[in-house]
Length: 65
Image (cartoon, rainbow, N blue to C red; front, side):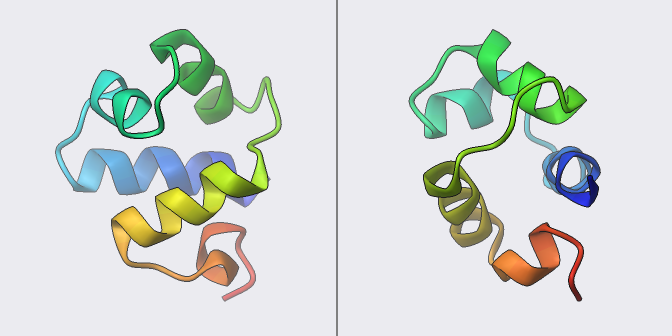
């Protein structure tokens, strides 16, 4: 469950809004909000895009590092 905390922390550290990240992922803000709260499982394609966006590894994103 690290991924949900990490994507929120990375977003906040980058001074981005949920709306900005949702637009980057081409999804509705409410959908992205559910990912951050852990109410929906983040799809692999979105995890890859977020890792690229924040310049971190997928291992970091999921708490393996």
